[in-house]
Length: 295
Image 1: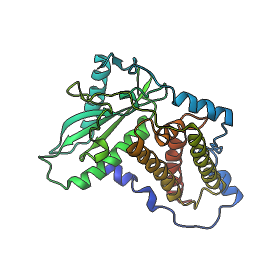
Image 2: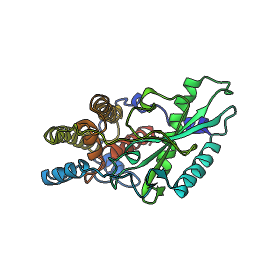
Image 3: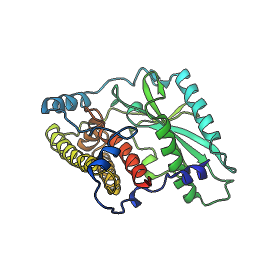
Image 4: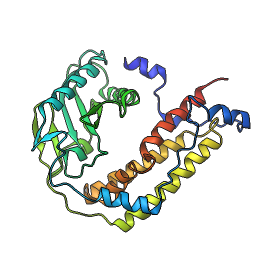
C-alpha cells in the first residue's frame, strides 16, 4: 500500500520548483478553472473579525469537551469508533512485522483549550520489534501514508462534530512524549498518561494581533503569486511557509506552554474566513499536481 502511494506521487514537496517559462493568459485560465481552485482564497477578515477571533481563542472552558468526554473519561462510543477506524486503516498498510503498540491523543481536545473548531488526533504508534526493515525509513513512509489518509478524509470523518485525524508513527519524537500538566491519553488502554491541568495564561493579545497580521500578509502574498502564474510556480514556497508557521507554534509551546501567544495565534489563524494552514497545505498539493501535468 505504501509503495503504491509513493509511486503515486507523495514525495517531498520541497523538492519541487523547477522554473519554466511564464504562463500565458490562456494558460492562467486553464489552471484557474475546475478541477483546480478557480478563485484566490485570500484572508479578508477585518480588524474587528481578527479581534473577535482572538477573544474567542483566549476564552477557555472549565471542563473537557463534552462531545468526547464524560467527565474525565473518553466516551465509550467515541473510543470504540476510533479503534474501529484505526484497525481498518492499519490493515491498509499490508506490511509484515508490524503491530499496534498504542493509540494516543494529545492536543486541544485533551485539554481545557478546546473550542468548536478543534480536531481530534489519534496517533497510532507501531511496535516494530519484528520489523525487518529500516525503522527510520518506515517512519518516513508512514508520514506519507498519514498524508494520504488526510487527503482522503480531512474534515469528512467526525466524532460528534469533532473532525478525526488518524496518524501513524514508527518513532515517537520528543514532541509526542508526555509533558507535565499537558493532557495525554491512551485510547487503547483507556487511561490518562498525563492528566491535563489548567495552564497559566501566557499570551499577549496585542502581540497575537501583530503576529497574525504578519502571517496573513505573507499568506496572501504567497497565494496571490501562485494564482498569477500557477504553472512554473516554486511549490517549495508553500512548504517553507507551512514550516515557518509550525516552527513558530512549537517554539511558543516549548517556551510558554499551550496558552502561549504563538500557539493561540496559530490556532486562531485556522478560524478566519480562510483556514490558513490547511489551505496552504491543499494548495501545495495543487501546485505539485500542476507542475507534474504534461500538456
